[in-house]
Image (tube, rainbow, N blue to C red; front, side, top):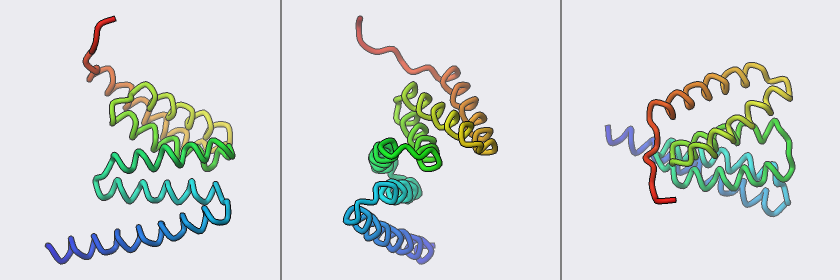
Length: 140
C-alpha cells in the first residue's frame, strides 16, 4: 500500500511541478487566460491532496483573472468550483451566488448539459443549506 501511496504522491508532485512551470510561462508571456486555467488545474490537484484551503486560494486568483477577460467558457467552470469551495468553507451565500452565475453563464453560451448539471448541484446545495443551517453568531 505504501508503494502505491508513494507512487501517487510522486505523480502529484510531477504534475504540480509541470503546472508551476506552465504558470511561470503564462506569467512571463502575459497570458491571463492560461494563468487562470493553470490555477484551476492546480486547485484540482490540491483538492486531490485534500488541501481545500490552498485550492480555495488558487481558485480565488483564477476567478479574478477569468473575470478580467470575461470569457464565459473559462469563467463558468472556475466559478462552479470556486462556489463549491466557498460553500464548504462556510461562505454559503457567496458560494451559491457564484455557482448561480456559472449556471447563467453556461446557459448563455449554450452549454445546456453543463447548466443542467449545475442546476442539480444548486438544488443539492440549497437542500443542504436548509437541512443544515449555519449557527447564528454575534449580536446586532
